[in-house]
Length: 114
Length: 114
Image (tube, rainbow over all chains, first blue to last red; front, side, top):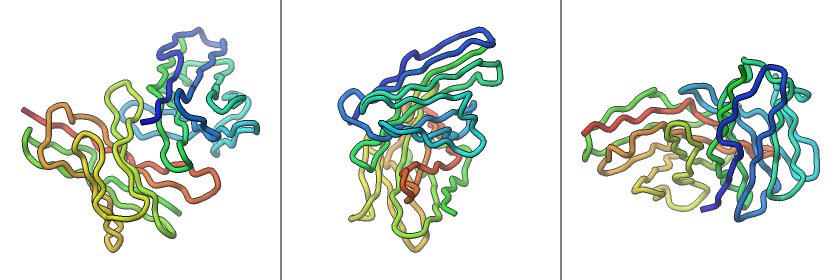
């Protein structure tokens, strides 16, 4: 199947700093990638849809200026959590859509803000 | 509005017994349906999908799912459960809008006991 990677897998940062998470489709090109946030034992919450070469589409209630998304190439999308606070601590997962049908997910990034 | 429901928070089965994880959906038009599995602290792994064709879909790791249009269901099944199948399972339907985002059920924890 199609492979999606995320980096880093785990990050700990101080409150007020910014953190960048990378999502890469390794063996296919993805014009559309998605960013999710997942709370413990809960379903995924879609944060935004990332489109290559254009602005991301954010879901209602997600702060655009806080969660910056860049999709500069067909294989890379980045999520930057700006001025992170403890309440931003979560498991962030990206996915990339393959052949307009199936989304393949990255392994996730565990963010802990102290 | 499109939605997916997984009525069981947890399903418990004995190893070697058949398992079923339930999913019902509500969409306008023909649904694109997916099952994913998530192991602890990992991303989602694609199991199978229904787009069109045979109502019985076979996927990874011996799983299968049956699309039932009249009952608007897409239950996940496996003839003989393994302890290693213990994980969190998500059913999803593709939003038929332009972004093609997935709408997830709340997830079902499958516990297979030896």
